[in-house]
Length: 205
Figure 1 (spheres, rainbow, N blue to C red):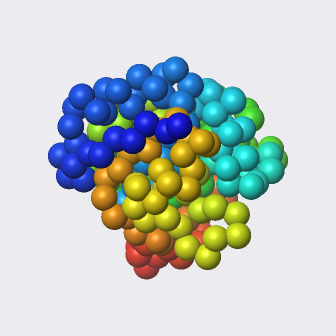
Figure 2: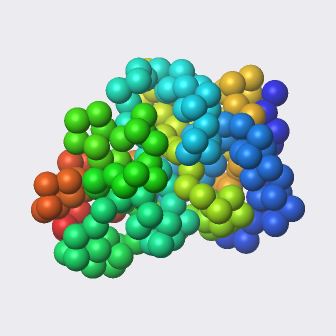
């Protein structure tokens, strides 16, 4: 049964965040809010957690996860940035964008694209996600919470708890979330290519 944390969406209670992070450090898979939609998350080096998320999403081992970062400094440890990419991404973050960039050795090989050696990264501005990331001190391995066969994602924590109670360790309810995924921008070839239009304005790229 998943623990349910009902937290304030803009000023989450530190005690609850500390408990969530302790669960993550012990190998938990959680549902948590972002500035686009609810997401599934586990620690970046938690192989079992990654497999559980794949099973929840109904995706195979070719599915590319996103690494959600607390800030630009953390993002910069995971990916290689040209000067142009640095300026453009820094201006757009935090926000509802995922950027695909060449991975550094800090990224486990199993999480990078097998041929391009790239990885998706983002910095969410949702206060609850930010609080979790700051307390954790490392990126979250993450995937949008969109279940197999579903037309729309679940937008509220109680709904996630009801549907996935026996498959998650914790649900962090930060209130109503959106239904639109991030805008995805691929920078692996040196120039930005918008490969998915979502919640972020693609005109910036």
